[in-house]
Structure formats: structure tokens, C-alpha cells
Length: 56
Image: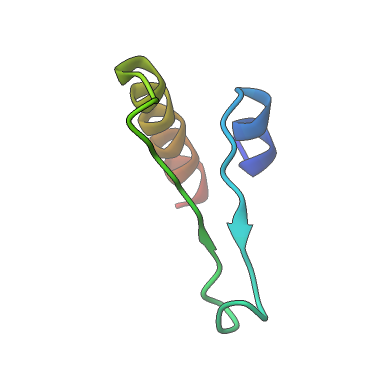
């Protein structure tokens, strides 16, 4: 799963890339609100864990 796969699942997780952040320090921007359901947060956690396993 790559970042595009997160979007395909309905998860908007934009990347913050240089020059906004220093070179080789790109990161993901997550924004949660009280309007998100427990199920949506759980879906995000599973998706991020899957992405992490694929990248390591």
C-alpha cells in the first residue's frame, strides 16, 4: 500500500515534502476531529500500520 492507496480507501493523508520540511524528512499530515468516528480512526490505524510494514 502506498499513499495513493490511502486515498483510495477514503483517507486523506497528504504528504509534507521539501521545501516545506528539510530534505529527507518528509512526513504525513494527519488531522483528526471529534467528528471522526471510532471506526474511521481504527481504519486509519490499520492502513498506516500496513503502509509502515510495506515501507520497512
